[in-house]
Amino acid sequence: MTSKLSIHAAISADRASVSFVAFSREQAIQCNITRKALEQYFWAPVGASDERLLKALSDGYERISARVHRKFLAHPSTSIYLDVIDFSS
Image (cartoon, rainbow, N blue to C red; front, side, top):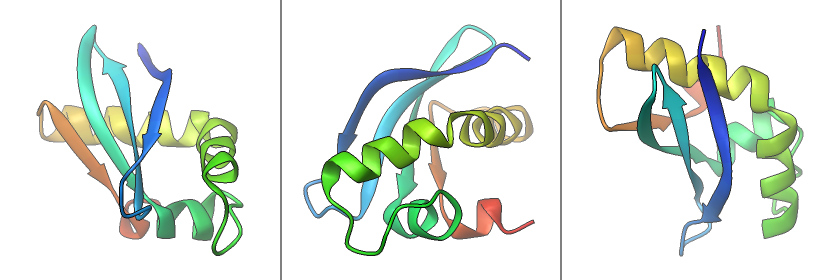
């Protein structure tokens, strides 16, 4: 699998998600993961600071990257949205 997460990530204006760029099969994909997913599956405390959300994204790199890659293979797109449901199985 050739998938990776870029180091550039940003918190949305409403602080409800984090956006980042991932690469799958040499294609850049704009991704968003919800705060709720980071809180429930990646150890971000409820109401975490922006820095803590970014750390949770970094700490969960392997699993998040794998999910992006699988979603991209199933439905190729230039953007992918990740929510709690994507990590519940």
